[in-house]
Picture (spheres, rainbow, N blue to C red):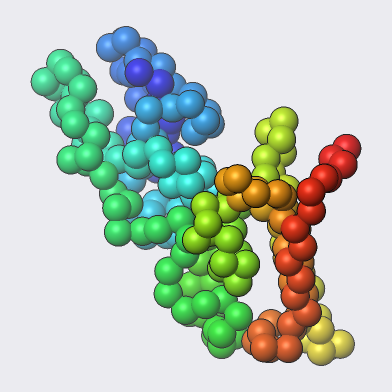
Length: 201
């Protein structure tokens, strides 16, 4: 069984790596291809990391360290779902939409969590293509999804731009582009173009 470790656990990652390997398992530094991601519930409360977000996006179980202890003690892998620590979270984000937040410290913390949980594979809600099974186009391990923001309070700049190449089953590729000022969504410039052919370098 291949697994990955994240954040501060009750013992060091080196200790757990040795224990896992001693019992026939393997540890990876990434989440691609792993059976599960082992993390402390405290990590999830802190907003997690890109590793947590990627595991959630890929549907990889995120479980507590207790699973390791119990599996070793009982000398067989325990059911992963019994140790899950993220079932109440969703990779498409929760809470207040990021462009509707106030600039307080609490809002900034919430924004950070929102962006991490939204994930780099999330199709923008305004495209409505997720309802048709749309996904971010991926080729050779590259996701065609970009988001930029620019903020300079002195120059009164606070804008963003989102560009996504979206693949829809039984359809053509779609290019989504959105640009505007944060908090002024109704006046944002927005385009969704469907193309029969795309030349990707």
